[in-house]
Amino acid sequence: DVKVTQSSRYLVKRTGEKVFLECVQDMDHENMFWYRQDPGLGLRLIYFSYDVKMKEKGDIPEGYSVSREKKERFSLILESASTNQTSMYLCASSPPDGTYNEQFFGPGTRLTVL
Amino acid sequence: SQQGEEDPQALSIQEGENATMNCSYKTSINNLQWYRQNSGRGLVHLILIRSNEREKHSGRLRVTLDTSKKSSSLLITASRAADTASYFCATSDYKYIFGTGTRLKVLA
Picture 1 (cartoon, chains in turn purple, blue):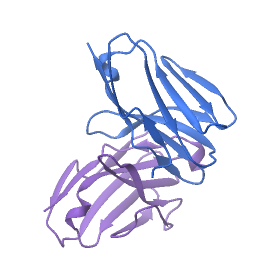
Picture 2 (tube, chains in turn purple, brown; picture 1 turned 30 degrees about the vertical axis):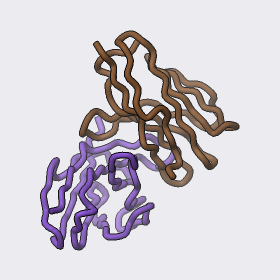
Picture 3 (cartoon, rainbow over the protein chains, first blue to last red; picture 1 turned 135 degrees about the horizontal axis):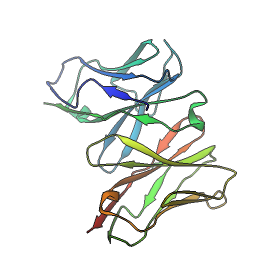
């Protein structure tokens, strides 16, 4: 079975801190995605990556950056956390021809920024 | 607004009844997918229907797609308490776009 893991289920940080959210997949998928999920807004795409060292902005990249140094790992970075970044963060991966295939999701990280 | 918009936002039914959820979208798509999310967890893929397909079945799930109306429906037959979850449609052209979801509650 495909497994996508995220480094933390719950995380509490203070305003201004630099935050790293890690995502690892074990199925050699080329494509990886970061979403945030907020009530009433559904899932919104932050960044995605189609290959190592490649990244593309999604719909709401402001305040975030990403890193993909290895194929299996995709990191989301909040350079200076703010309270409006309190949210559920979901990582996903998919095989090549990404949008023709299903996405496999991790369990999510619920981030609270105080 | 979201590319995929589910309707209704919330649905409550008795165990054994059928549940129908609808999804509307705005632009052309390669395929449309449905996902389930149990409370506070990640999403699980249920079914994918391609733009040249009209209907697809998987177990108790039936999905229809009407590209002329830019809409899809998900039918869950003989619902169970374990079906209680949020259901999302996701459309894709060059990236996935998720709707806001339908919260389904199945009462035992």
